[in-house]
Image (cartoon, rainbow, N blue to C red; front, side, top):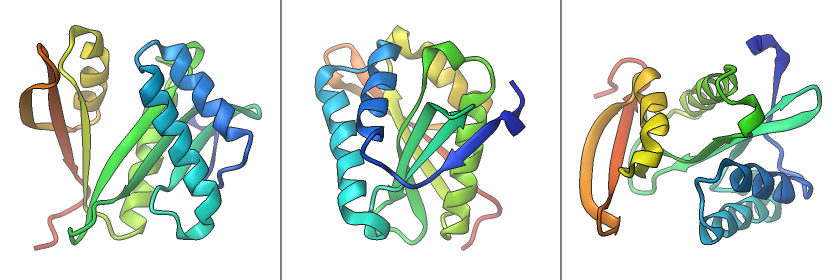
Length: 167
C-alpha cells in the first residue's frame, strides 16, 4: 500500500465510536475496559469539538477507517505530548498504514509546537511487535516500570524527539 492511498481526517464523527471499538477489538490486544476508555475519549472529542484535549487522527483507505491515533499535550509541560492510542485494523497491518499514521501524528504534534512524543506499552511478550514498531520509528526506551499493570506486566515508556531540542 502506498502512503498516497491513505487519507487522514482529524474530525471525530459519531460513527467513529464503533469504528474505534471495532479496530481495537479486532487487534486482540486491548481489554474491554481499555476499549471503553478509548470510546469515551472519542465521545469527549465529539462533545468538546475544537476545544478537545484529546485530538484524533483517522487513517482511511478507499473510504474505510483502517486506523487511528489519539494524542494530546501533557499538562504542565512546555511542549511534550502523549500518544495515547494508535491502532491499525489487522487486515491492513504491515502495509505501511501504522507508519504513515504515526508520521502524520508526529507532524501534527510538531505543528502544534510539540517537540517530544511519549508513548507507553506493556512489557508482555504479546507486545513485542508493538515495541519493535516504535523502535523502528526511532522511539527510544526511556523507562521501565516493573509490575506496573500486573505482576509480570511492566510498563515501558518510549520517547521521540521531534526536530532539534528547543532548550
